[in-house]
Length: 439
Image 1 (cartoon, helix red, strand yellow):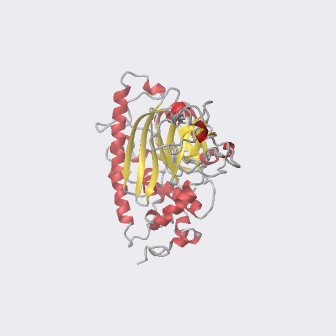
Image 2 (tube, rainbow, N blue to C red):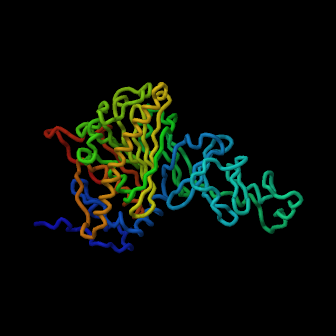
Image 3 (cartoon, rainbow, N blue to C red):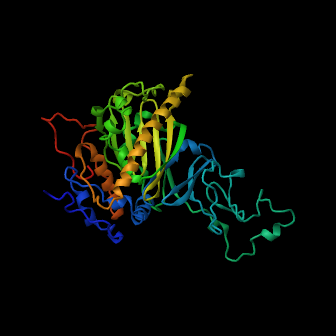
């Protein structure tokens, strides 16, 4: 009998080897022969630290919704690669993002959950009251309007005598920020390259959905006792649907799934057609977006946007999961249900939104229960890796190779399928070979 672990590294792996390309030889094989990413990638603090620096601190990361910073001074305080970032809009409506660090003595300027930068649309340090405008420029030490300096004591706070001090040199540290559709996206990389390079053909694939007008309607936060990659890998395959999601399987039938991905830093699949609600719920309940035609009017689009965002877009609503690694075996999910104004033009839309939120919560909790069990199993040193099921797990292979690329220092955009929609249940007579690595 052949050894199923032949060629796989023993556990634990020396963390010094995590950047060694040869360690991932089995994952780099064509998908029909490939093994999963090494288990230590899901359990090792050293591997997570490497991911924070090489995956999350490079490239673009979706962190929230544009509607959350619709007006000047509105803000989101988010964590990326373990670093706190403020995202806001300036007085001209342009997006701005900064490290959440005062240039004086490094105090965190805004707390998590802050929805506005502060009084007068100024970002103000709670320690020594240094303040910054919405473009990050330093407005000076407390000698400015609204600083609450006691009358008659202004000279005490005047920094004019300070030598070699120019407040123009002490603005907030900028972070690259952009948007696509309803998503806010930031990059800690000082030279990240255009967002469109990472998105690939997604803007064209979603062109008819008018995504920039979709607005958040419901939110939930989930604490997940599993690695962030397990959450993503579960989202991007439907092999598990019949056993984990009996309710979802009625409206997203196993046989109606297709791979739906082109060039870009993402994995994609779709359900065509979307079935009507069953007695256990489903995706009906709101009016569809006007103007959708063809398959867009009757399909669910499911994209994992690298590195950490699940994007589900249906004709009448969208569901997004922003995932953040908190520890090797812990992930924080923020789930957002969005809708287009067309879908809200109905007196019964609140009931429809409630039903959709309840259905997604059911599906998500089923997913979280199973990925937590995967995390428990993957921590067992006896497990050294498994084989991928090429037909249904090609997106996992694509994703895992994206992770490996970043970890070993390689930056590339994976190619896509030759056809826009690749059937996953081909006729046996005309079936073509499975694609190669990351294809």
